[in-house]
Amino acid sequence: MAKVRKVFICRNCGATQQRWMGKCPDCNTWDSLEESTIDPSSEKDPQRMSALAWTQVQSMRETNADDAQALASAPATGAVALSDVDAAPATVERMPTSLREFDRTLGTSLVNNVTIAGLVPGSAVLVGGEPGIGKSTLLLQAARAWASQGTKVLYVSSEESVEQVAMRAKRIAFNESELSPPDAAGTSKRVSSGTSSLRYSGTSPSHSVTSSLFLLHDTNLARIVEQTRKVQPRVLVIDSVQMIYRGDITAAPGSVTQLRRCCAELVYLAKMANIAVVLVGHVTKDGQLAGPRLLEHLVDVVLSFEGDRAHSHRVVRSVKNRFGSTLEIGLFEMTGTGLREIEEGGIIAAISAHDTPRPGCVLSPIMTGTRCMMVEVQALTATGFLGAAKRKCSGLDSNRMAMLIAVLEQHAGLRLADRDIFASSVGGLKVLDPSSDLALLLAIAGAHYRKPIAPRTCALGEVGLSGEIRSVPHLEQRIREAARLGCARVLCPVSKDAKMLAKQLAIEITQVKNVDQALEQLG
Ligand code: TYD
Ligand code: MG
Image 1 (tube, rainbow, N blue to C red):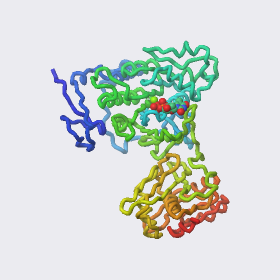
Image 2: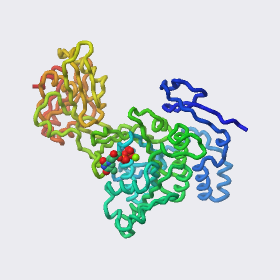
Image 3: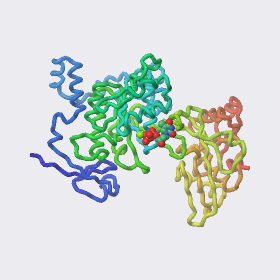
Image 4: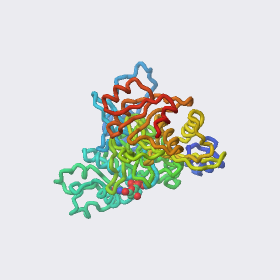
């Protein structure tokens, strides 16, 4: 009989080692190897894969017996020449939610010249984020939106009981007609071995929401797969994958072995049964621990749900997307009744706050994906020690800040060597667009000289090492957005379209060639 083997798996990168080591040789992380056992007998068990077993039954049912026989004896798909592949553009079907900010991060596709965004059937999506950031809230809102369109959704809540989920459903935008209170106690009763649908009055206009959204509280993967088989949903939400376990693996739920195997099986289920699987995963403060990081390569789409718990803004960022762009972000605000979308044109920085000039605060229209957003960049300089001056920034790139400080010293004659410099983007949004360089440069110089920029003025432009202000992509879109939001003046790099835009949008456009010209705007 084969012996049970001990291996050590890295909780950061998932590499397997034969013996314990202090540092993972693959990813160089310290103290990340976790002991786990491999039982060869369970690996060979044909019933091992419950999802596999089910999908085999499915394919048998769909095809007739002879076909199934042929299917079983048919060789696995072989290699094909590229020229033989049908290159007709595959029309990707998508299931949109009414949350446009969320849909956009899931990806968009063009069908008959109409752009549709949303979840791709049969795809596996991982939503990662710190505990308590609002993942369950977001997915319950999304589940509700899918269910209201008649899409069957099974929401597996492995952390909370169905009553807790139903309570949250009441708190967020589930209005009274969707959840009729009279028989609430009876219908929301927890059924431990089965699903309970959020089913209330059958005559309600939103009948489809309540009869298409099913809740299940379970952590055993085999039972979840069994319930999925019964309910036959088009979307399966697992909240969270860290709590799911397979009974035949001795490792604890949330361990590397359990996570990898459970996730692989759920992804397989998604592909074979054409069910979109949305997995929720926790990450720790430093984004390190076993979980989302380990699972990223298994799934099609990885969304990261970020934000500062102290701020109400939340950002859904696409980290990996096989069906769309990874540049997109979705903006939300956490309110007392769930997440509210901050739609296009919504701003993090209030322009009206710029009616009174403040030194060190500059607005900048930045691009994230296809959308333009106005952010406020702030800087402060304080007395420091020569050789030990602090340079700290939050929400901005510290390397870019260091570069801008050097440009100010060399090309504008500022003495900053003994000044502590602090910079941040207001509202907790990460600003990675280099076109906010000019705004940060003006914020630092403005803070140093205690001179503000004119009211309702925004700045955009990339700053080069020789002190020149370089042009930025999507200049027109940015200036249009600034004008729409009520900016009176834009500082931008030299562009031939500037005059035409200024006339068209009735906005004052000041073109700046270099750092000296930019600093002249402070006063
Ligand atoms: P939750 O979705 O449970 O977070 P996660 O699943 O990521 O752990 O909710 C997180 C926080 O959001 C919680 O502390 C309470 C708060 N919250 C609101 O402010 N408003 C709401 O409507 C809801 C449902 C939650
Ligand atoms: Mg949760």
